[in-house]
Image 1 (cartoon, rainbow, N blue to C red):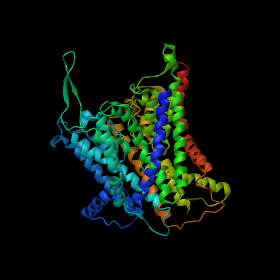
Image 2: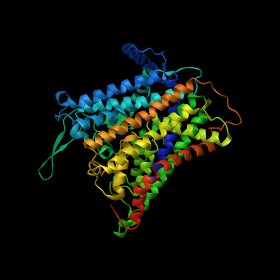
Image 3: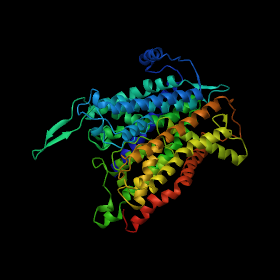
Image 4: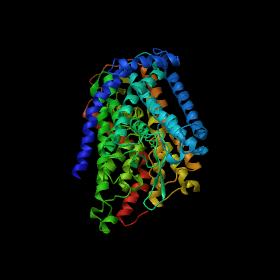
Length: 567
């Protein structure tokens, strides 16, 4: 246990050490300052603008920015859907994978467009190499870059005044991919490949078993997809078993780097915020609130999982420790650490089965997604979601002292509050609506593997994962049906754009306002009080929204388990 806890401590230390300089680098990239990679990448950047006829200095209003974003996403969706349907006719398909069923193809196209990477199919049995690389891996880069671009547009509004523009979508998108995602992905992919993560365009391998039979072993260009799946908080695995597959994560180092990759960019963005607004302490305060919430959830999940299952204890298993569904190569604590990190970052990669976790552990993972993936969250959109909660926090603080609320030097008025509430509660309301529909329809219940409160948790998790743009699965639920493919696709779209569009609207509104100097009545953001209030607001809003359904799901299951009942 001590070694496993040391593993957790090492991860957090490395993350904190890297996040500050990474945040400074991100700030320099999007401020147009020279960086270490500028001599190599700046000519490439300018060349891309010339090829695509993009005016680097041209600015956009928030509506123009949003329109460009939506059109680009729509084109990506069409491209990925079409690629799946014609993959049999295209090269790099050594296993002759045929067209993907229409509803599965649509769900997948929406999933990778929205940075959700929910997979209701088995990758090695469904997708060709070309589809995996040109469709899914490319979208992993682009969807992550869009989240970062929108975050930069929002941050920019705090240093602008009396202007109707928030930046240029095409420039932000290009810099996100070229200066940030691509270099990191190359580093991660090379390390993964050196550790044994498979990377080949050769056909699947036929091996002879000991009893004389033949086993087909799936291979493919995995390391290149694995790197961006974690760094872009995507999570879409090359294989059905995702990071539990030895070809996706063969060693303790790859496991460590996958968790670090999930957290690195998302944890760096609050520091980037601080550097861009010329107040690093305020960025550190946002990071501190995220870290506090992360550690609270991790502590509860570790306590729940290591405390043991009373049924297993009665069977004579020491401590009742539940190893079902865990990553047995690494142990209980690394499995929980991976699952906690994947559900707070909207990454969706898994190396253990969340369905097999203890009920309270499952509750933690559900809560991480249900609150809008703001504890670090998806790259870019996690910070955006936390800023929604920060706006709510400052509004509540303003009510307490009878003063117009403000944040980072900008006054908050009814429009910003309405947009923030839509961004916070829009995905949450959709989770409850879709889960409610699934529960009352026979087609929704027919996919369940478990009855009772555990079955409710399976349905709730599926839609929390979809609407939170997470993509991880609780398992135990067959989601590859027409109903679930269409319902989760709708949830993904609402979860993505009910966050991004209100954020851009807020950016456009705040950019037009003047910067208000701080006064004695201003609640200091760089203070322990703000960190406590922000973390408390996240917990309270999440609890008020989901407490009834949590009681009927994981909490009831925990109580019934203690009473001797299972599902």
